[in-house]
Image (tube, rainbow, N blue to C red; front, top):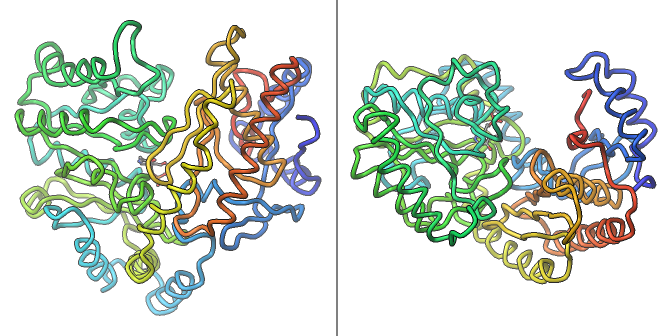
Length: 473
Ligand SMILES: Cc1ncc(COP(=O)(O)O)c(C=O)c1O
């Protein structure tokens, strides 16, 4: 693991600027502690240049890009047509709120949104959009509560932090701000209590929503809706079952609650359909979009809802100064045009099949691989300690981070944060040969880390470990 090191130029720039950034004060002590324990600090990366399926760091090393700007580059890095469209909009409008592109983009979006969602409102980020969706739901239903799920992530604002739930630490010191949020269990497969089958656990989670919450936590009339990611992205790329998603829709219908799908990450083709909800045959009442709509260049996010929800709801005002910038809307319009012209969602679906077949035997071949899972090109490889080894989840996280580190050292950029999962978000149009080359590198990294674990060698980081390379950034 020691052979993979941050490049000299990158290291020097990070070192000299660490004093300006969040958590910079604790970087040296965390690093020293890790090293004292014979552990390795993670490679860090600063992008010097990005193009198509690749990025290059300040030390001129090339990486295949599965990190994808945190899943925001559906067409690969620096797509020239998107850049041209963004530049034209900037030259023509600079920044004004009152420009025609936002109207055009709203119309184009409704062409591709689930049929009932005929109205759109823009925001800058996914965070703002998720908060706008909740605000809209509360005002429309004139109710005080929203149900959200454990392990979910809806953003980093005060409101979205309250709705999100990576762990019990998530809301520490902010508990008082979360008064209206009710958290429910998300039925992901490794959280199944002993003695329960997956189907029983799904039934339990639905029962919790349908009976337990209205029976013991808040009256049904005072609940506005359920906010769900149709694939838990930041929480580890978990995919819910169709039974769960359809059960959720049925409960919302029965109780008069709104189903709010946060498709910031799962939307716009990431899962192999335009929207994640399409996999389950359900239609939400409000849908949150962002990330991919930017075409990888300029932020653009928002919400869509049925006419009666968003068409006449003056209390639910939203849309900050820079919501729906001319450049962001131009990026969105060009992105949608390319999606249609080039069959981007179909390409994503075919590419996902190739990825699935390439990774098909990893679970049986490697003891440290717990699960290869995903939907379309939302792919996660979850790790576990070797049978009989100590350390539990911490060990698994260290293994996952070590795999990400070894992959980075070999020229593949992927994500690993607080879950024992390496997450992969290739561009939806990635060249198939490059996708396979990236997966070859990942497999080499897995094999190397497995051999390291078997021989009792050094893994990455101290645990609680240095996250995926951004402490002190
Ligand atoms: C499902 C989901 N919702 C909301 C957000 C927040 O979006 P943004 O980071 O653009 O504010 C994210 C970000 O990762 C996300 O994955």
